Length: 315
Image (tube, rainbow, N blue to C red):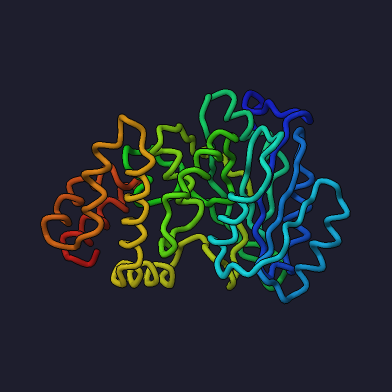
């Protein structure tokens, strides 16, 4: 922790949006780490997606804390839909910042105070961070690995990727209001992760986003992860199959179309030219995207993979 980065105060109010689904095994530890944040006032709003493992009962007990609000239970089907519900319905009144939270992580005690400090000091609209992924061992120990998402941002990275795990996002109310407005351009069949959408809307509309190299939470890995650390042969195989299936291409097309609709004047003409390239898979569109690879991915390795996939027609 760098003292110069922390400007948190108990008077600074952060609205934390937590989506749950069958998370009883880890929920108490996670909520405890959220409510124990130092030097900020936390308000937690939770949306549960038809849990059947006792999560609902746990949440009802937690609601005895005045800082915790449980929205009426619903059936949403995916974490993305559940988070979009939170984004659209959670009351923002009085919040100095808005954060996303997953149900199974453990936040570092200075997560929010550090990130509020970065919002203030850098004058940005949103921040995210690296995380420490961990796997619990049968003997009670942990295996850990830094997940580094803090490579320098490039002009169009938001068309292909998020700013790291959404559970690290902290945004200004103005940014969240812009995200809410941008979601109106989303089609019902645009199945794009909520964190990617948030990052894309903020960046395309001219907002500034900082990705912090300092980890702010322990990112639990287990068999039920909706989105995990993206490491290992199994994950690599899954990613390749996703490329071949066309699903990721469809997601990128949806994001590009939405970004062209919400873009500021400086970016709109270019995004309107680029967005149709994702709708097609002909050689000309693939070569055009290949020339943009350096602006579409932050990691050098990912740029190489993208160029190969486009040249081979895999994507």
